[in-house]
Image (cartoon, rainbow, N blue to C red):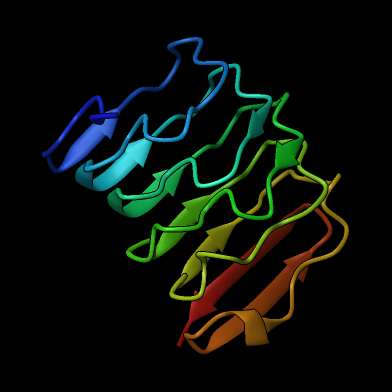
Length: 138
């Protein structure tokens, strides 16, 4: 399946009532930043972003997003920044996130366990407050 978009620097799909991301939907997408914030996403299935080149992915404000498949981010090796703030996720998969440098999880109290820093290739510093989890490379 050919992806919806193929090339640009920034793609803003915020507030579009998107409820799911099908595998191949963003295949061949090449962007610096893709924002899918404040949609109606409930879950993200396996390999949802496979074949895409995305450096920064923002899923903030999808309040009903509870499920991330263990392979949701598989095949998106270019991902450096991920924002899952204001979601209801309970687990954070690490497959496909080994190059991640910044992870934002503000106001995500349902996520009570954060993966070990050893799942990430970059050196990661964890700063934790109860309502804020952020990993930053040094």
